[in-house]
Length: 628
Picture 1 (cartoon, rainbow, N blue to C red):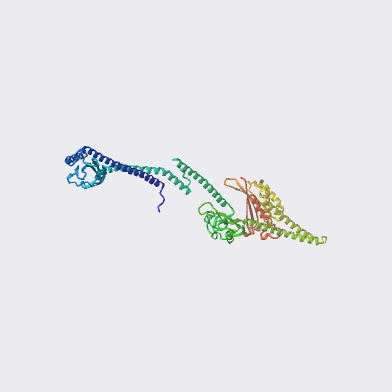
Picture 2 (cartoon, rainbow, N blue to C red):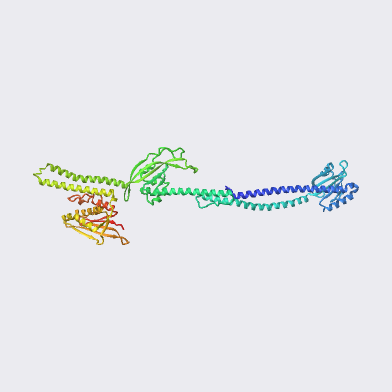
């Protein structure tokens, strides 16, 4: 099937055909006019010759003058180069004289149409074949004498071939001129078509580029006013489209950026059960292998069952809507009520807890002809929130409350039992028992007081770590105060106090309260779990960066106590966790010391590490960053 002709070919063919038609019509009319004029001219010429000859032989027309008349007509015809044939005919049809034949050999001309017309009306004309000359002749006959008694007829004629040859010669000139004019017309039409089609072709190319999304081309505003206006309008449309595309692209990139940075996973599915939108966070939460951003793009249009393996999430995304149906012109009803499901996903590095919220959303359905969307459909949107930390914190708080209740209930029960026993004793008679129960009450109340103090410290550090501002402290003075506070306990357990300090390290930037809490808990633990004759050592040194400046102060508390098993070293920083050897005995702690140390060091933006070997001792190292 042929495609539509181009504007250039249409203009060229149209202009060429129009000009050729005009030239052909004019040439035809000219030739026809010339032929008619020439025929009239020949007619007038023949009439002139006939009248001229009639005036010469008017008184001599008769049979007795036949020889003279024959000579005269031959001389007259010779004067015209025999182009005109002259025949003198008597009324009865006998030929009296002829310029190109012998009269005696010629048949009667009484039946010739032109002779009949001339005798009847005085003048006759006809074209017919001449048997004498064996060619077609144009005849004109003039009656001599009155109609009542005509003397005869003078007939003059010319060969039709000669008349046609003259007319054809002129026609050839005319048609030659027409042919030259046609060539000029074709060139003119070619130039005119190019002149008009080239700007339009350029505008068409630009419009086609715009339709393909190429906005780099601009139309040249020049030429006739209409084309200049069209070019300007096309440029305005291009600028408008560019602005709209820039806005759409900016909105798209903003949406993609928001979805990519959103910590919650988002999945949108259509009513056909296929994914319309999914962000990288959802890919990560669902445990789909590969680059999250690339996977999010590759999953678009995939079936939900192929991408989401969790059955509960599939049910949320594939839940049927309450109204409307895809592919209908009727508006869909309101989306279904939101649902929430708690999902646990096992991963290599632990358990991931998600809160999945699903609800129906109204999605636009594009019209079939590409126009504005006039229909709507109900899809499903699933939002995944990672509540692993929240779940862990809730579990920690629950465990904390349970552990705190358990740890407080034990001394309270002991105190309560001791008080009840004391109330039933005779203090005058059983003073030793009373003293033993009072000592029990003192020991357990002291433990409760220590636990409450630890809980208050831990709560204060967790609730507002920013309130502890760093100050410039003299490190030797801090360590001397620490030794003074624990000198009595060290002497009671016969422990050696050892100090290894960097002599160049004189000051430290730290919160006085947090640093004291950290060192007190570490030294207290070292004293509790080191047997008599052991050693507690305090070390301090500075960490220097590449520029030669101190960026951290490292303080270590090392003991030669019982040590901690390797499998328990990761858990000793948990609240209320105690190693097996520390769960009983008079020096039993609260289980909060190392947890307080960890939170206090974190509040100072530092780090704490523990190394220990069973039977050899434990070393806890704290690194506190310094302001450069």
